[in-house]
Image (cartoon, rainbow, N blue to C red):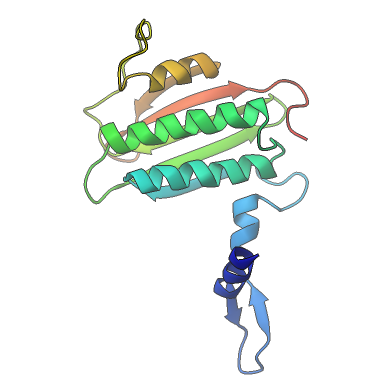
Length: 180
C-alpha cells in the first residue's frame, strides 16, 4: 500500500495552475497494460552493476506477469532465470565503466516464443559454449550459460551492430496456452 501511494505521488505532474493532475504512463509501460494486440516488446538500459542486473530481473518478472506468464509458473521462472544469468554475465564479463547494458524481451504469440537479448559494450570478451557442467557441482562460477543452454530452445551471440560490444540472445519456446 505504501509503495503504491509513493509511486502514485511520484508519477503525477501538474497539468497547470488549476491544480488538476494527470498520471504519466510509467506504470502502464512497465506492466504492458496497453490492451489486446499491443506491442509485446520490453527494452530498457540498466547500469552495469549488480544492482542494475537485479533491477533488470525484477522488471522483466513484472512484464512477464503482465504478458500472462504468472508468477511461479514454469515459463515465468525459466525466463526470469535466463534473464538473470544473461544480465549477471553482462555485468561481470561485459562491463565497461560508465556504460550500461540493454535488456530487450519480445513475445511472439503466434510462434509461442519469447526472445531475450542482453547487449553490453565489451566486444573482446565473448561467451563460449559451455562444456559439460562441473560434475561435482562445486565450482563457484561457470554454470550460468549451462543453465541458459538447458532452458532455452537456442541461444547464441553476435557483435553489436550499432557500436562496440555484443548481444547475447536466447529463445524460450512456451507450451501452448502458457500465457493467459
